[in-house]
Image: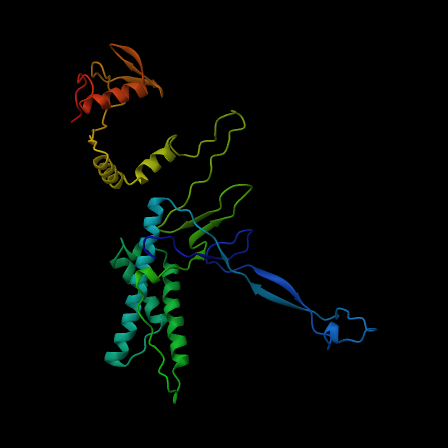
Length: 314
């Protein structure tokens, strides 16, 4: 489904089962009827559980809402689109083979062609899980099996032939747990994590360092990784367009400033400063300056509101 979250089915053998994996088999006790329902039995009779019981295997399906980042959501949309293209191409091959040569093509023939397709398109179909693509072809094969079951001699109403799928109606991809997809159940108060090939994963929450109170165990991420990700995910072009319209409505003028060097160049002399601390910059001429004040004065100067001493970044 383009522009939205995918519909994910889940199942598995852990506390929270993996997406689209074999569902957990629950043992449920089925009690055979004693011949009469309790309300039909005589008042003096005692309805007891029979000695022979059967174990019934029940498959349970689960659905979980996913919270991907903006880049992950874009890759998930492309994943659905590529699988939709594979589905439609396989349907087209079956259709043309029957119309032109009266030859039926099944799942086995199309699955054998996957290696060549992936080799010819490494940046497209070659990015995705091989077994997930097989599941998409099996999905098409199930549709044709149901179609042939509906085609019966003497039936007045002709069954509809399998149709091509538009992107907006292709909303799920099946994965096999451990092959193209990985599920990590949630612990105590933590997120559950699902990893899909060609989509990505969500980083686990930082863990406090027991030896150093107030700090966290390194997780190979930059200190400002979350802030940097949120800045990159923001739609700055759209925000600028909206802000320009709002300024025009209010009778104000919007001035765009090049931010390069505003936080590290001295607003008084324009020299490059050192930054020994996050809140302070050290100018070789004017000494320590508050970093936020220095950046604000540089921006004001470049917008034509300040003294103009600091040079505009190229």
